[in-house]
Amino acid sequence: MHADEDLMQRIAAGDADALRELYERHAPRVAAIARHLCRDPEMVKDVVQDVFLRVWRTRSYNAALGPVSHWMAVVTRHIAVDHLRKAKGHAPPLHLDVELHGALDARAESALVRADLARALRHLRPEEREVLVLAYAHHLTLREIAERLGLPLGTVKTRLHRGLRGLRRQLSDYPEVEP
Image (cartoon, rainbow, N blue to C red; front, side, top):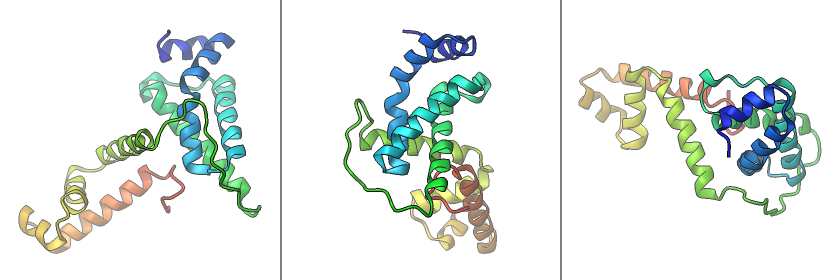
């Protein structure tokens, strides 16, 4: 088994076997992300196909941006959102239960979402992140946060607002997140 980065280099050189190996390794996760966003089994299949077509055609992976699996998750979300936008105005898809071979279970999908949230939080300023964590993870009121941090209530409100706005920007690939 080859490392994902090696496979991406081989794909960049036109190696179809490397694409096949990457597909076998990542198609279940790509399908799980697409299924979470799209729900329509036919759209999920289209998204998976489009993701791997984009990998093959653009060969745009940059190792400096992080692991291949994270990059592919971002590509999948972008393509799924594109499919959802194109489908607007059409009849709503039927929500049929389709089991995809090797697809991730709900706990694994939840872990992906938590990882994305943690990554988004790391992009915030520390003081904004601190207020968000106290408010949403520790369930403190804004007044309690102000007292704990020794800050005026208005400052806490501003940091919470800016932190939420920053999270919204970081998580904009999720269709559930309003811009």
